[in-house]
Length: 535
Ligand code: V55
Ligand code: FE
Image (cartoon, rainbow, N blue to C red; front, side):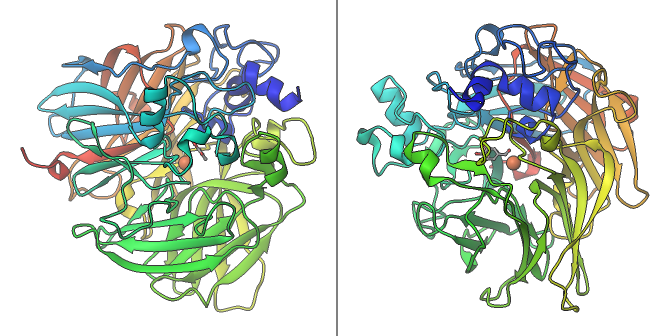
């Protein structure tokens, strides 16, 4: 067994989240937060069947982890949840999230990014909160449910699929959720969305193709954007012309008719994970990082990716609405960047704010050169990448923005395609030694380069927060910041904490106490009440 396998089996979550608080964290379902002290549980060197150290990671759905770290499996409904504090009267909508919750135990060398998508909703209305979770029931879920066993044993490796499922959709919907036309679309970047009814959360379409406009094999990013002016849906898919292809397709879909308004394709310098992107009124921006496809590893039964530290990064820019022929690449050093916080254009200048790691962002994914996991290199910090299209430069500029590690930055999603001022995220307190720092929610001010923190202490792990505007007309940042706190000292029993987004330092104004561990979360979404289908 390689170091990688060993790590994955025994402690990857702790490793990824706890020690490194890197993107592993991110993907992981849960968080960015404090590091575990060396030699303690949660630091990647101990058995995950032990409780994590204070400030350690939340381990929902962790592979090979017994007891409290087991998958949820149960589809849960809790009506009229217990609330501490005062639920804001004007808060009307749903906080949704998804994450991998494997139906059957994972192979020891599989990773936590694999597993059937388990979608949850906190429906908040009239001062009351109902909690509900349902699996996203794509063809993969249904086939396994029928067979009574795992038929997809390895993360994004179709060579390993059971022969009985050839040709079926591999969609899990385990990474992110969006709202489109009164549906919840559960997303995984290698497949089309799985569509769920927004109210009942039952799956209504296992392969959502926008009325047949996208091929049923279309990869669809987990990080589409909402056009800030029109509300249209902007998305892309990599490996767009079949498994391992170097083509990325970009498209725009009308928010109300679902009509495809634009599509273009580009070729990338190498086939790698393109997890997120940026789009403004005029431009599309993509960041190519060397977590690249590894055919040899897949033939040996491994995952889709390995980290190739010999490759540079490439920042690509082309005109939105065009044919992609104007595509320009700007080079930079070996880095990774997985999540975009926000982007904007200013004349010929383009700005792309993203979290950046110096090395492999996911320590549980192999390094191509066989190097052991690099936890320091997996720590993620917010940077601004910029280019000036009026020059002839072939290199992008990059500048660090904030001192705290934050693998899952968010913004007020109404600002996806226009200039923005505020960012949000979970992070360890940057003013305290990482080994004892509490888990915080932060509100970042990009204009003053300052931030406000609420420190939740060392006994909780905080999942990625979402921003909920008070109403459709609120100014940027006027509203609530909410997220899941997994209690490390209560078998991960979880709370939903709701903060005033303009005063996060005051702490929660309301806490929704679940009687159980919340389902795993990679990414979450706020859906305003007025966007729910009537009736
Ligand atoms: C991420 C998560 C994924 C994935 C690829 O957080 C990237 C990043 C939950 O699955 O497949
Ligand atoms: Fe993501």
